[in-house]
Every structure is written in structure tokens, then in C-alpha cells.
Amino acid sequence: MINKSLFSFIAAALLVSSAYGADAPSEIKIGTLYAASGSFAAISMPVYTGLKFWVDQKNAEGGVFIKPYNKKIPIRLVAYDDQSNTATAGTLYNQLITQDKVDILISDSGSVLTSVAVPLARNHKMLLIDQTGTGASFFSKDNPYIVLTADPVSSVWPKHLADFLANEGPALGIKRVALMYATNDFTTTQANAVRDFIKKSGAPLEIVYDQGVPTTTSNYSVLINNIKASNPDAVIQLGYPNNDIAFLRNLQDEGVKFKFLFDIYPGLETAHLLKTVGAKAMEYVTTYVTSSDINYKPQIGLNLEQYKKAWKAKNADSKIEFGFNAVAGYTTGLVVESALRITDSMEQLALRKAMSELSGKLTTIDGPFEIDETGAQIGAITPLGQVVLDGKGGTKFVVLYPKDVATGKIVYPAK
Image (tube, rainbow, N blue to C red; front, side, top):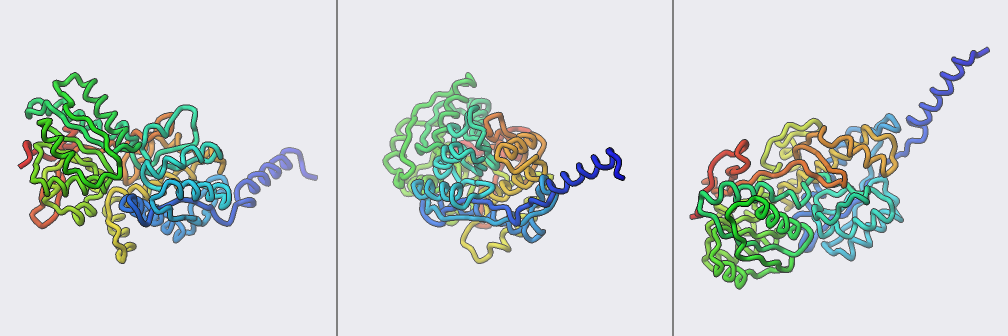
């Protein structure tokens, strides 16, 4: 006869056995989008290859470990091409949720293609794993269905840029600032942040030119001459890769050299900019120095040198360039993996809770993972650097700010 304590033990063991494995699915479906063509392909495809690298790596190891099932489970990546079109993206996000019924939903790269996913995910009570969509409007205290994994939210991106101008600029003679930005969530948020940071700094800085332009802008010749007429000591131009490419090309065409110029993508997608505008066009441009050029000590996954080598070997036949976005996609996978290791269940808000528990405790190849209560990423703020020629036909970065990570001083005015 089985005594009550033994019976209770067996019953508990059976319950645990049921919870850990008996109901485990044969695969975990992760749904995402990518843009193989169109204006966002240059940032989307590197992110997608980074995410796919992680999926392939995990599947080669037998799958990703999921705590509620106490075992590794293979991943099936369900991915569709949105062709850089928001209407197409909206339809495909809806398909991933309602027809494919994916377990985990991951957005395409960038704020424009992420923007249509935010309300869809919220309405369907599906956690949106936001890779690099950093628009501040995506995040609110009443929406628990979003987490930004691999980029700081746009409102904190330009902190080091603004702090440099406020703290170091006056001694250099920088007093008059020109600001131009593409009118999308990503760069409009950054422009708002620049204004706010400068205003709060109390530094003797004046914004003498402030202009938003369509993200589709491809000719900046007139705008460049308008900026020049404002006689700025520093110019901040915020856009996507195609904006930076057109702006830098037009500067060369017009023979204009600003004393201080900030652009985003010479730092984020350096190889792509080298191919499209050349090293000389980027010389002395200031930019963000990202995790594709900073060696963090990750607690999970490969380090930068290992990943870069493996990524390039895997994508040797591709025209996709390695840069920050390739790191971002891999980082997303690492954050998802870390959450699956500790989540109480596969319920969407349980995954969100797991990611909150990781905040401030996880370092990846991309640096510190830290989110606020809205799911916005506030870790991994990128230092400010300046592009210089490396003497080999390429470029390298001199980190300018903050001072504790600086590797050199700015060349100002730019030669």
C-alpha cells in the first residue's frame, strides 16, 4: 500500500513530467519580415541575416532550450519579403499572427517597417520583438506587448552627440548649429532629442537652421546651399542610408565642406557607405560608433571577432555588407534565447516578464541589454566618433565622446 506522502510525491512528479516535456511542441515558430528590395533593403537584409545566423546556429545544436519544457526545441523561421512597403508589411505581419500562428513575432528592421507592426501586435495581444525600430512613439506604459532588443530608443541615441556639442563645442568655437532630418519616427525622434538636449544643457548653442524633409529625398543640392547660408559651425543631418548617401554625394558635387558634420550611417553601415560614396566623402564626418566596432564581453553567444568571421563565411556569396545591423539581428536572437531559458511559460506576457528580468543583467555582443517599463531599450548608448582615413583606401573611427572611452581628439574644423 502506498502511503500518502509517497503518493503525493509521485503525483507531483507526474505533474512536473507533464509540464516538462510531454506537451512540448515539435518546433517553435518564429515569424519575421525582411526587405530584399526597396529603400530599406540596405538595413533590413543585414538584420535578417544576423537573425537567421542565430536560428541556424541554434538548430545545429539541436534547438533552443526552453525552460517550461526543460529541453531544446528546433526553431522554424517563417519569413516573408515586405519589399520595403508598409502596406505589404502590415498584411504580412497579420498573416504571421492569424494564419501562421507563430509563437514569437519579430519585426523587420527600422522604425518605418516596424511602425505598422506595433498596433497589430498590441491588438492581437502578441509580444512584438522589436529589433531596431526605435521611434519613441512605439513605447507607452499602457502597452506591454513590445520590447526593443538591439538599439537604444531614438530619444537617447543622440545624447553623446548633444553632450559633446554642449560640453566641448564652445571651446572649439561651435555656437551655431544646423539641424536637418528625415521626417520618420526614427530620425524625427532623434531631432526632437537633439533640440531638447541642447536646450537643457544651458550651453551657448543656437539652432540656426531646423528643417524636416521627406525620407524619400534624393537631391539635397538646394538644401545644402540653404544650410550653408545659415553660416553654421556644426551641421547635423539625420536620415536613413539613402539620405546619407545622397547628402554626401551632393556635398561633393557642390564642393561644400562643413566644419562639423554628423551623419548616422557612416557609423552604422560603414562598408555600404564606402561602396556607395567612398572613403573621401566620409572623411572627418562624425557619427555613432556602434557594436560592430566595439568589443564587448558577451555573457551569451559569440564575441565580435568570432561572429564577424563566422557571419562573413556564411554570407560569402552575398552582396550584403557586415555592419551594425548584422550585429543587431544576431543580438535579437540572443535576447530571445536568454528569455526562453528563464520564462515561466510560452505565454506572451510571460516572455515579456522574462525580458524585463534580464534587463540590466545581460550583456551581449551589442553591449548592455536594459529596458525601461515601456519596453524601450535604454542600454548600449553609442559613443560619438569621427571617421578618418586608414591609409589603405578605407576608414577607421576615432572615438571622441564620452571622455572615458575616447581614443583621440576631433579634427575641427574639418579639412
